Amino acid sequence: MKKTALWICTGVLAVTAVIYSAFLESGEKQSDNQPPQQTETHEAEPAEAVFSSKPIAYGSYGQDVYELQSRLKLLGFYYGKVDSQFGSKTLGAVKWFQGEFGIKPDGVVGSKTKLKLVNATGHWKPTETPLHKQGTKRQASSNGGARDGVKAASTAEVVSLSPGRANGLSENELKMMANAVYGEARGEPFEGQVAVAAVILNRVKSPSFPNTPSGVIFQPGAFTAVADGQIWLTPNPQARKAVQQALNGWDPSGGCLYYFNPKTATSKWIWTRPQVKRIGEHIFCM
Image 1 (tube, rainbow, N blue to C red):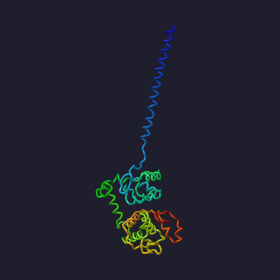
Image 2: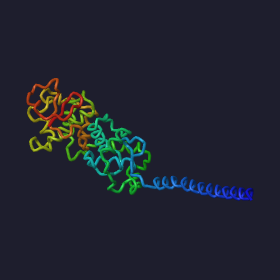
Image 3: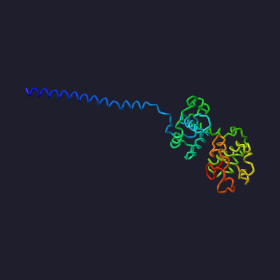
Image 4: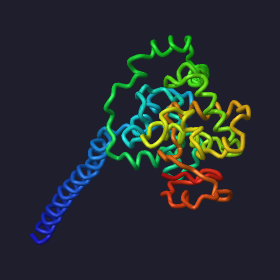
C-alpha cells in the first residue's frame, strides 16, 4: 500500500509540474509579443516636415527651398514670394539671417544654418501651396527648358542685374549708386558694399532725407567720396552687383541710416548714434 501511495503522489506532482511549466511558457510568449506592438505603433506616428540633409544654395529649387523661404518669412527675414526658387532675394535673406545668428554669411544653407533656423521657428507650419508641386512645367518653360538648376541660376542672375528691373530707378541713378558704393567701400567685403547701398536706399525711404538716390548721395557733407572726388571713379562690376542686391531687398545693415569708419571719423556726433553692427571697417548705426 505504501508503495502504491508513493507512486500516486509522484504522478500527481509530475502532472502539476507539466501544467505549471506550460502556464509559464504561455505567459512569456505573451510578454515577448508586447514590445513589437508598441514599437510599430510608435513608428507609425507621422513626422513633421524638415529639411533634407543636402546643402541648399543659390540656384536650388524644390521642397527644401520652399521650407527655407517659409521659415525665413515667418521670422521677417524674407519678404518675397514663396516660389521654391533660390534666387537673389532668398540669398539676401539667408545671409541676413546668418549674420544675425552668428553664422558666416556665405549664403549656403548647411547643417548649422538649418539647425538655427529650425530652432528659431519651432512653431512653423506650411501655409502656402508649394510652387514646385503645382507649376513645375511653367518653371521649366520660363527657364528655357532647364532642368539642372545651373542654367536657372544664370537666368536669375542676369535678370537681377538688369537696369530695367531696378524698382523704377533710371540708369543714371543706378550709376550714381554704384559710383557711391565704389568710392565709399571698394575695399570692403561684398556684404559691406551691399550695406552701403542699402543705407542709401534707407535714406531715400526716410522723410528726413532727400527722396532720390542722387539727392541722398549729393546732400552736403553726407558722403566722403563726394567731398574728395572719388565719387567720379569708374565702378567695377562688384559695386554694381552690390547695388542690385540692395535693390532686391538685401539689407545687411539692418535698416541703418548711417555708417562710419572709426579709424578715420572726425565727427563727434556720429559716435552718439545707436550702433547696430560692424561690417569690415564700417560701423553701421541708426
